[in-house]
Image 1 (cartoon, rainbow, N blue to C red):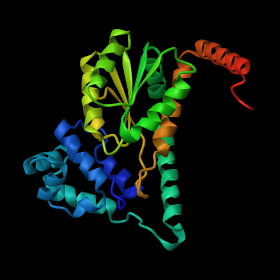
Image 2 (image 1 turned 135 degrees about the vertical axis):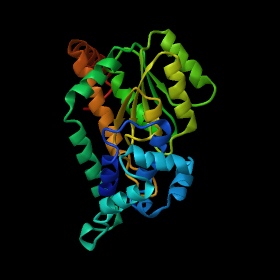
Image 3 (image 1 turned 180 degrees about the horizontal axis):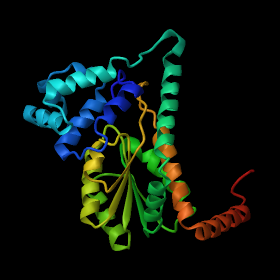
Image 4 (image 1 turned 45 degrees about the horizontal axis):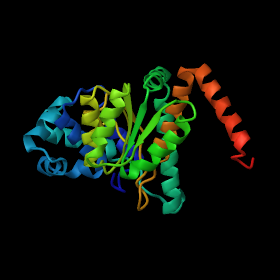
Length: 283
C-alpha cells in the first residue's frame, strides 16, 4: 500500500465492493484501487488498467459491475469518498507516532470484523480438525507462520511450517494431504510472492481447504482461498508493520483451542509438566 493511502481512504474504497461478487480480473482492479487510494481517484481508466495489468475495457466493465454508468462516474465517486480524507496534521505527532496510530486504527478495524464470532469459530474448527495442519508463509510472511506454529504446536499434535519455496514446496503440500491434512493456513502478505499464490493453487489441487490471512479482502489471495481473513498491514515506515495480521493469527489460534477445549487443556498440562521436569524456563 502506498504511504499516501490513509486508513480512512482505504476503508471508504473497500466499502464500494461490499456485497459485490467480483471476477478475478475485477478483484485485481479493486486491489489496485485499494493500494493506490486516494490518488487513484485522479487517474484515467487507461492509467488504472496499466497499474492493475488489465485492459481498459475491463476497467469500464468493473465500474459498471459496481453500479456506475462507466469509469468517469466511478472516478467521481472515488473523489467524493476521499476528498475529506484527513492527512497528516501538526497535532498528529511525528511520522513515527503517526505510524503507530495507524496501527491502532488497523487493530480497531480488526476488532470490528471480529463481531462475527461464528465465522472465526467455524474456521478454528476447520483448522483444528486438520491432522496434520500445514502453515504456509514465505518471505515476509515466514516469521508470522513460525510464530503461529510455535504456539499452535502446544495444542495441535502435528503442525507443519512451510516457509521455504522452491520445487519441494508442492511435495510437502501433497505429503501433508496424503498424511490426512484437510486444510492449509496461509499467510499472504505484500508483496505477495508468486510462489505463495502457486502454492495456494497446488493446495487446492491436493484437496485442501485454504484459509488465508491477508492484508485486504481484495488481495490476490482471494482468488485461491476458500476462507479469507483480512487484517491490514501498516505501510507508513520503510518496511511494513504486521501488527494486525499477527493479532488475527492469535485470535484464530484461540478459536482452534476453543474448538477442542478438553484436548487443549490436556496438551497444555502435558507441556507444562514436561517444561517443569526439564527446567526450561526461569520463571
